[in-house]
Length: 76
Image (tube, rainbow, N blue to C red):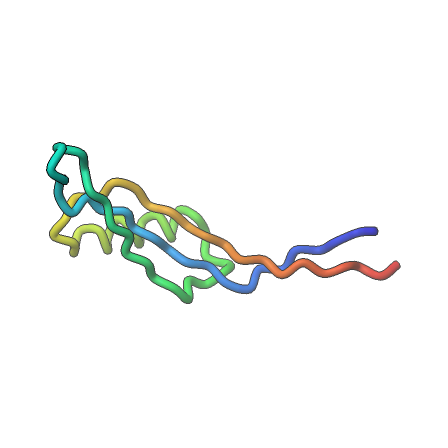
């Protein structure tokens, strides 16, 4: 049985440090942006994340991309 994976959705997430807790450990929050074009290149998505992070008041910890795929059986 062969299966194909078809992209249906992509999301960009920025993880920012919003402060520290009582123990001095960093506290992180995620800023998510949905409806990223599934065919957008990773470099472009990364550069967009860097640009969006520049508009945040909190320091950027990491940039993540989440891709959602629909799996379907390929009939022979």
